[in-house]
Image 1 (cartoon, rainbow, N blue to C red):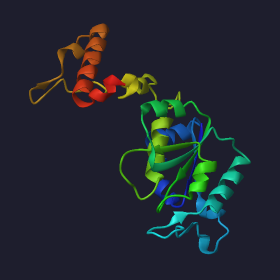
Image 2 (image 1 turned 45 degrees about the vertical axis):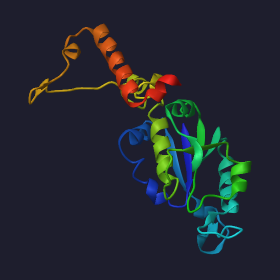
Image 3 (image 1 turned 120 degrees about the horizontal axis):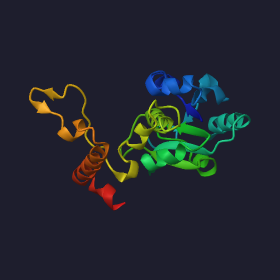
Image 4 (image 1 turned 180 degrees about the vertical axis):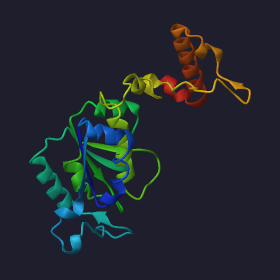
Length: 225
């Protein structure tokens, strides 16, 4: 899979893709992440990519011209399955969306900044608009990192134990059950005996019961979807 990310502040994305699971995914050539500086595609002086909004008001808006320039040049080498704009007024990202996007081959993320991007680009080029929550960030870069991580870890071969992704929270609309590791007893706090029983069917039954119970308590809305 290839994920291209257009941003006006590429340095914000240096860290998330240089460590841990995403780093290994790229080293295995299972995932390719390219961070693209929008300022490289503007024809304006001083690498300007934004301007004041028509009609007045506070803030700046990213202009359509550099966005189209970048998109058209990238499309000469890549056919994108989706062009995704990260924006607070998009559809809220969830595990189902991550699963669906992980099946794609090429994705392009557009990171908003300032007061957003010219609506005409959204109207004519964006295929999906996604939010990571009901709050506002300084730009779409952190949201792009969240999506890349959530999607990338689902690619077969990225995780050492592929089944671990299948038992994450929100798969099958359930939260994950509690987990324990060594020592078996710490300050009198013991691991549930069933996990030490060696009976795999009992363990799986217990984990499912715990997952259902935790979901009912913390996220009952998931059980009605």
